[in-house]
Image: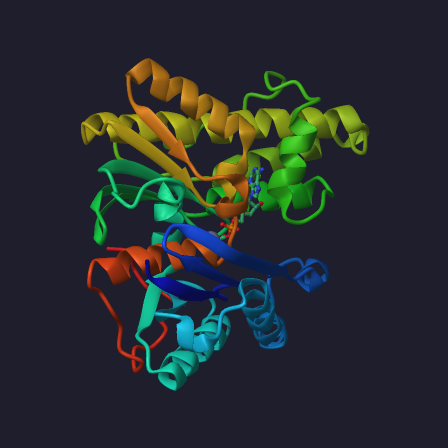
Length: 334
Ligand code: KG4
Ligand code: ZN
């Protein structure tokens, strides 16, 4: 029953979690809203905020659990991919704690955290699966054979799916992050009004492209200048955009699963909070005779519980990292 303390600071969320065996004792996330004014994450602002929030969340999680640092078996942090100046904060704190307590340090790939999160409740056995990671920074299809056995099947060649949601929301004057806003507005919209492109749907590989979809929304908005500002237009664009994005994600994931003869599909990352994606992926998996595993929404967006869980699986499997291991902003999953 190892007790793992994990820190996540790869982008603009500061998070600390403590996992004991399969029980999540504490999981705290501090989101940064300052970036909205700049229209994107400002690395300098993010790292300064991590420095403010991480010690506070550390004290808070230890307070909630009543644990002393000496009772923690290993300290983990996200070591990449992400913003260098943000990754450094969490990794340095975790390394310092590990050295101080004389315990191992575990470096965790942020993408591995997402990819394993659907197994959080209930299973330390990582069943082979085809995994779709869809977040603000990544869109990846991965064949998973077990812990640390990953093969990249495909990825986005331009924007990540979440990035497309965020950029379309910005075009429409909606808030950040755009995904939840688009999902909310799509509920009242007509998904058949605009036939937006399903880029690379039939490309014959497992790659994605979302930048053409975003551009198509921009052109369509320009054509409809007279209607601009009308709530129905925004709702219809959101619904039509979401339908196009979800259709590509679902169809390409199912094709990858069929090619790998996978019996299980998993989805993770911020965009996997999206109800339309969950429902359509569930229906497509049902038709194909494949099971679907998702993580609860609070484990889909960036958090430290998923880092603690991945670290715990690595710890049990005998992996550890040297405290001299550097962060890597471009860390690859495989
Ligand atoms: O995993 P995450 O928190 O951070 C990264 O590692 O990138 O993902 C954030 C992304 C944002 O682009 C956000 O718009 C998107 O996830 N997102 C959603 C929804 N909730 C968050 N996209 C679509 N529908 C949602 N409900
Ligand atoms: Zn993420």
